[in-house]
Length: 203
Length: 203
Image 1 (cartoon, rainbow over the protein chains, first blue to last red):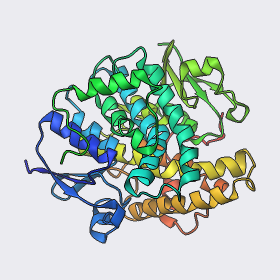
Image 2 (cartoon, rainbow over the protein chains, first blue to last red; image 1 turned 90 degrees about the horizontal axis):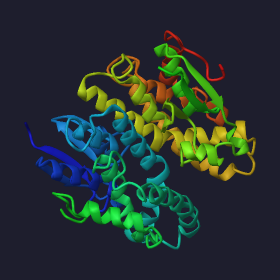
Image 3 (cartoon, each protein chain N blue to C red; image 1 turned 90 degrees about the vertical axis):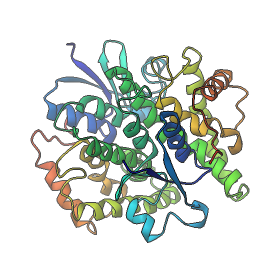
Image 4 (tube, chains in turn blue, red; image 1 turned 135 degrees about the vertical axis):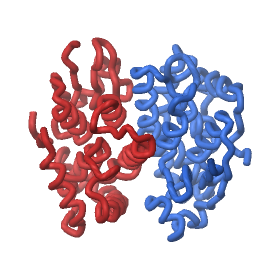
């Protein structure tokens, strides 16, 4: 098999999901960095790989490209310990992955992007405050779930945890205060102690 | 097996996805209508089923609830003709499902909700115009794909089509003009001619 190529942007939580899982699976990959703040995902060459102009994109075979971080997580984890075999548990993993993209990522990731990556905090102040209301709602929901569960599904680490961890653990970079969420804090510590864990900044 | 119960809101495209697939699969179900405009999904009883307070929710066993429309689509279609068995085709279906929830639904569904359901068009005018820019980008991407594909994945009707069809075919209720998208129009006609097709307003 050819070495997988991951089109990525180092600070991206969506990209980090794939880096973390590939590392934990022991699958070697080549990381190709595109700076999204410089429009590098809007080039004709990259748009031919993902017409939606977003990273991460995984080249699974020469010329075969898969986009959408959570779709890539499922693709890579099928048949591994990171995706439950049980049908009901797998359904719950999918539920959390869609929750993450619809009710979590837009509210947790975007303030971080404006505050810590683009550094356009002032320009986006009103929008940041609006998003943080929804983001705190997502965090409260996670906190409630984690008060009685060590991991999101089936009592063990899965791609549901990887997906939700990616932007949650760096939420303070988007102005979030995680101290009112002790169950989330303990879950973050549990994930950091998983075999093969790498940091989001680790190239 | 007990009859499945679907917690739903008739005008909802997300709910319609599940109604359409269940009908095409020939699976009987009981539909429980909750009027989201009257806060009926924010009751303590419903929040105990889905803490995120959103329909659709499928009760798959008494007391076992699954949320997130696209997770429900995958759960129901596994092992059927509506989800490809081929790993790469299945990955592409997942990619389109996450595209739908992240880059399509927030922009296509919300203007329809404000204009045709809540009838608060004037109050939301600025936000509607902002969302329509992104919505038209999603439609252009779909149009390009459908110019050379009869369906989204593998040349045949799948849950990727069901998911994207739900809000696309009623986009004009959100102020969208679909006439510049002839390939989308032809695809809508192909879907309406599928065996077991039901309309979004069909209770």
